[in-house]
Length: 247
Image 1 (cartoon, helix red, strand yellow):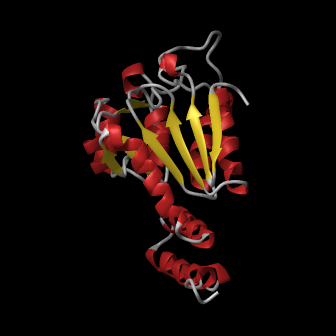
Image 2 (cartoon, one colour):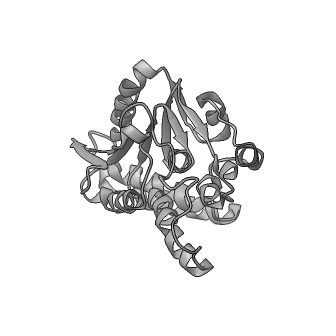
């Protein structure tokens, strides 16, 4: 475990902190790989993941943003292989067995904006800022767009991508990147209260809701309804779902 990502277990909560505050928690490929592994294994020992950035920012993007790697440009197949580090990381948020809560202070740019969006729930301080800056660096940002595609409506996505505008948390909430905006001084308390509320539900319900949210949006309406019918019966038949006093 590198010092660029810190983990702490607080009861049922696995806290993951991007820990490069001196450079705005800019992410390396190694950090993306480590984050992927943490998310995919989180459900084995925890019930909720809380993702933060150390210091004043959440994550200002990848450390390679705007920098050309030395040597000749890679062929398309090799570039695709390299990019899979990030695509796999976005996928890990979706495949994580348990809820993932993003906590955004300061800047969430590029990769940071993408992982904020792909969290199941994202709470943002009222001073947070969001941006998809890739086009300003001559990078066609379908990598970030793949994280936003099931979170952000088309017009909001294309505006963010083409304008490279820095937006505030209220606009990010309207776009679907953020779930709720909280005064910065109250952010930690809001996260703690949310975790307590989530933990009031039995684990089968928490996991079942994540499974449904992950799969149903890719189905046609009839399929999504049938999946809801099936998973509703399966989850609610669990002994853990019986009302208190009836177990």
